[in-house]
Length: 338
Image 1 (cartoon, helix red, strand yellow):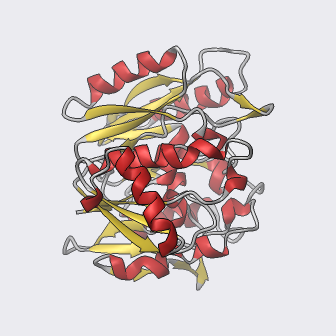
Image 2 (image 1 turned 135 degrees about the vertical axis):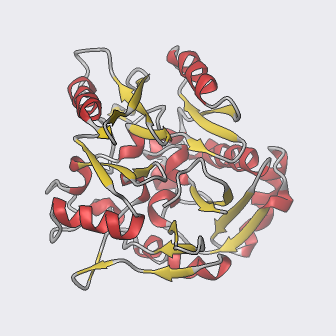
Image 3 (image 1 turned 180 degrees about the vertical axis):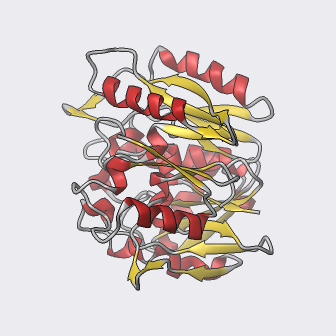
């Protein structure tokens, strides 16, 4: 599986229709999506899933209002339950001839929600809009549930994931898989040579421990890692444990470089803690879309990102309302490698 910073052909996004995902705050959500799509179209194509042709004109108007390059948007009619394409769309890998393969993992609503029938069919429904064959991964003849947000790769054989998401009995994805089975699956389908098992994700994360909120490769030997300085915060212990695990990890006798990224202050919406994290960024060919949260730490994090991604433009996107859907920019995008 190529790293996210390698050359991309397009980005897959689903248009938001499900008002229940942002109770009381849906009004501005299409606008946030339009802004994200517009920023992506500046330098590459977007494959946008819409539920029917009648909504196309309304969406087009909103995209134009946000200065999107409409010529870079391909509208695909495909009904979805939700918008989190990182988890429901295909995951792209390369074969030995450098040709793309679409991996169609099973999706079961993060083993939490009941309305996932449409989302589980997304990869098969859109496969003809992509080059490359499609494979539905199996283990001992059983389909495997796996979400793109639960793994992160460096394109050189390293893979990050969490025990909380894949090995816990809470929101259990695959009761028939143990750690050694997952290691085998990651080696077989992602070309992983070494799997780094972090422990837990962040508070408020309804996926139960997705890694793309806590740790992300930014270079083949460097990880941005979420960190909490407040000892009274529930995230403090878990994120510190992840830091200790990463500190001990070596590739070819060399330690992985770690850059701590502070957590924004806890955000509560209707008394519910939401999983706000700066780690849910998305790397594009020429830019990085970075979630921000009207927090004093926004400026600090923007600075860190500008220093790291010198050849890419850092584009901050206010996600303080989007996060009420329990996901941010990385969760709603899925890259197709060139």
